[in-house]
Amino acid sequence: MESKKKYGAIILCLVIGFLATKSTDLQSAAFGRVVMGGPMVALLVSMIICNMMPTLDKDFKEGTTYSSKQFLNWGIILTGGTLSFASILGTGVKALPLILFNICLSFAVALLVGKKIGVTKNTSVLVGGGTCICGGTAIATLSRIIKATDAEIAFGMAAIFLFDTISAFSYPYIAPLIGFTDNQFAFVAGTAINDTSSVAGAQATFQAMIGNPDFNGALNVKLVRTTMLIFVAVVWTILMARDAKKNGEVEGSDSIFAVVKKTFPMFILWFVVMAGLNTFGVFTDKGIKLLTVASKFLFASALAGVGFKIKFKDVFSKGLKPIALGGITWACVAASSYIFAFAFAGYIG
Image 1 (cartoon, helix red, strand yellow):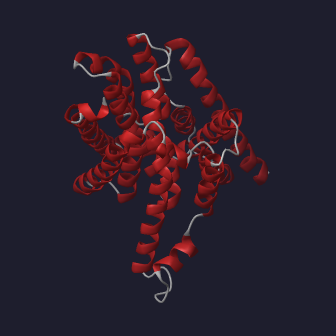
Image 2 (spheres, helix red, strand yellow):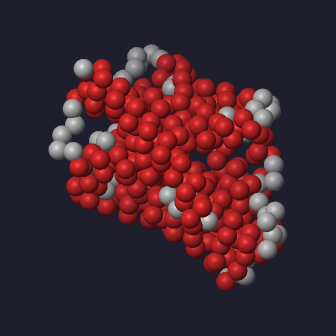
Image 3 (tube, one colour):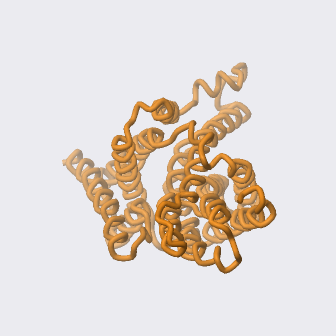
């Protein structure tokens, strides 16, 4: 009976993940773009179910916990196969200085402001990573490295979703109003809109406005930015190992390298391996598309597991500060991208 409840919970998370992932197709058909990514849909659906149920059985919770952790790991690994080190040398390479600056800015603002307003360090890291890299994918990846709680993951997702949506809908219309060239729009959209699907939606709107269906500048910039998740993940792994050594969680005689070797999450290693395989052309275009769909499905299933542990009262009592932090961090990164696009218009073209 116990195992039935556990496996029933796992199956339920998979079903919610599948339906949430398919909902993006319905959104595209209805609105011409993805309004809410599959993982966020899954999170909200499971939260609604959780809040409608008075209590959750212990064995059921074990199933949701398994889903939130294991599916997240596999989703991260498969995501690696969609990234490529070679993209840094591709058409979006000119945006690399801005991308690197925004990464530093985002984490600095999130950590400093988060500390000031009483947001946990883990939530601040997730908000910073989600804002500067690629939304939910970065949050999912970093959450496993820094050992964030389910509540911190949920707050991090909520903190960036609203502002990502605002960016995706407004940036294509702001660009012509302020006289931006196509490349300037690409720089801003590619570096200051969080989720890849949102960048794609904003680019599609802009393509229609300029009458050029072949324009892919924003996604090219976004691809380089997403690839930086590999390096950010490794850096945070090293920082966590350093903290573990400082806090006496490992043997004092161990070097930082030894600590990293002991504590390095294996899913990150496979994540990097998959990116390496893609860099060398092991995966075909069709294979990459399948990996993308599979990773999104696994992320959605994992977030379904997270949602079963979040009560709405906690979101309203503890989640408002993270959302405010998300807004501040988003505004700083957006300002940085717009200022860069104005100041270096000649460089961008």
